[in-house]
Every structure is written in structure tokens, then in C-alpha cells.
Length: 158
Image (tube, rainbow, N blue to C red):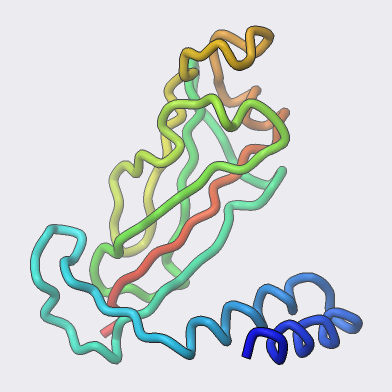
């Protein structure tokens, strides 16, 4: 199975690029299994029909993310195109070209709803790993190092 998927993905990349690899691999993996939600965002047993459960994923874009805020970096992630009817379960990661591995807040989701959520980068994790890193992270650090939010949201669409 895996070799067939990889071979198919490699052939398709010759015409359309890397995204074809990701699409071919993930669509095969997603369609061969089932996703089941045991508890929803509020910790309740979901009352929506199983066929309505969907996973939606994306990124705010390397170098394209809008960051703002004094003494911190804040961004909003738009989920409106996913079509969720309730707040989904969301997982995030922070990507970038530097210092994104030292921040506090990159996976802390604020004000989540069916149409989006916020991420607040509130500071630096204190470690001995990088003594030359800035003492404070803010929107200029986020922009300079092309920080972006990668996200996966699973929720109901009906």
C-alpha cells in the first residue's frame, strides 16, 4: 500500500509540485481509516451524526502571517472555510526560520470558535540552549523569522 501511494505521489509531483505528494499521502491515509470524536470541545459526548465529522487543516503561511501586539506576538487563524457548526478540537504548531522553538504560548489557543482562534506568543522559555536569543519576543521577531501557525481542526459540519 505505502509503495503504491509513494509511487503515485512521485509521479504526480513531476507536473504539480510538492503539494501533490502531501495530498496523495494524506488522502490515502485519511480515507483508509475513520475518525471518531469521543468528547467534543466542551468535554461532552458529541450529538452530531458521524458522517458530519471532518478534519480541516492549514497554515497561516510562512512569511504571510499577520502578527501584532506590543511586548508579545498575536495572530488570528481563520477557520471559516472549514464550515464547522460548533467549535472544533484544534491542535497547533509554530513554524519559522528562528527562535520559534523557544517561545511560550505557541500551542495555547485563545477564544476558539467555529470560525477561528487566536494564538498569543507571550514570551521566551528560559533555557540554557540559546544564550544569544532575544530576551523578549514580539511581532517584529515573529515577522523577521517568518513565524506561522500550522493547525489541524476536527469538528462537525452538520
